[in-house]
Amino acid sequence: MTDTDQEVHQQPAVWREAAAMMAARSTQVEKFLGPVLEQPDLRIVLTGAGTSAFAGEILAPALSRSLRRRVEAIATTDIVSSPREIFAEDVPTLLVSFARSGDSPESVAATELAVSCLRSVHQLVITCNADGQLARTHADDPSSLVLLMPPATNDRGFAMTSSFTSMLLTAWLVLTPEHDLQLAEQLASAAEQILARADELADYATRRYERIVYLGSGPLAGLARESALKLLELTAGMVVSYYDTPLGFRHGPKAVLEERTLAVVYLSNDPYTRQYDQDIATELRAAIGPDNVLVVDAQPGDRDSVLQVAGVADVSDALLALPFVVIAQLLALSFSVALGRTPDNPFPDGEVNRVVQGVTIHPLQP
Image (cartoon, rainbow, N blue to C red):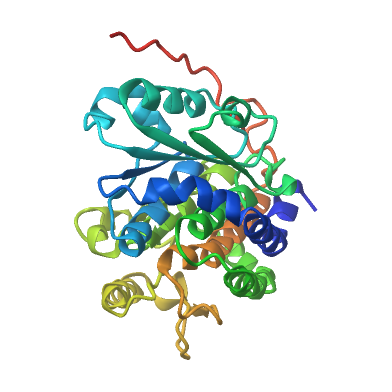
């Protein structure tokens, strides 16, 4: 078993562990976040690079709805390149940083730029590496709180898997009132269902698809983006992947469809939103055939070409992304192996690296 395979399969266990760790620190977390979240004009910015940024994209819409306040997902790469635009509004800000290693150049730079540009900023650092620069920099800062994930989540493989899902779950648990262990258990049980169907999902890799399209609405749009990235990473670009929203897909991007395309549609738990998801699934079945459309749904039912995930019909779409992304991870693993790639190191020549290299952080001039 490769490291990546192990890290995908360990997710139910590390979600339970991460939730228990946060429960043990609940008093400390509340002492730090309570006064910050009480500020009426607070702006919450979720940040990270690559997969870490997509955690923010999944969480931001759902957190805005849950907290009834402004929550934005802005990648560290955007903050570093345009800090004056990102922080143009000098309001109290909570910067939530997601980072597997915490050693990416943009990770620390984004937190420093926030301090340079804003008069009032608190920082919540969620990371998998206690020895990373981001964790060490913020460990003793009274305006920061560092939340470490279980050590096993500091993925050894190239692609972020258990690191991504554990950080996403932790952010939800500490930023919303839903911080009981039962929620983590519910999600872990759903993921275990999916992992038990790994061979079924691996069958898609035998069909030699050349393109895979992932579609999702609201928080699941961020999931679609992460799903497409996993496939692109683990196959080293040998399979073309695309992501969009169901409504956005018709406006030109639908041109990507051809006979060797697999479409994966994530259905929302929101009754209104899922109508649009179901519409595009129906349209895709007619366009490329039902065998080439995989619909992922948490609601009960018995429909063709639908992968049912039981036990999570009542959770927010942001949390639905946790078991759903395991499907994308398993598909990416299967395609990687079928194409003769090495999932732990799909870029042996170093064209793309586990921790980004070659980035120069330029000083911000007054």
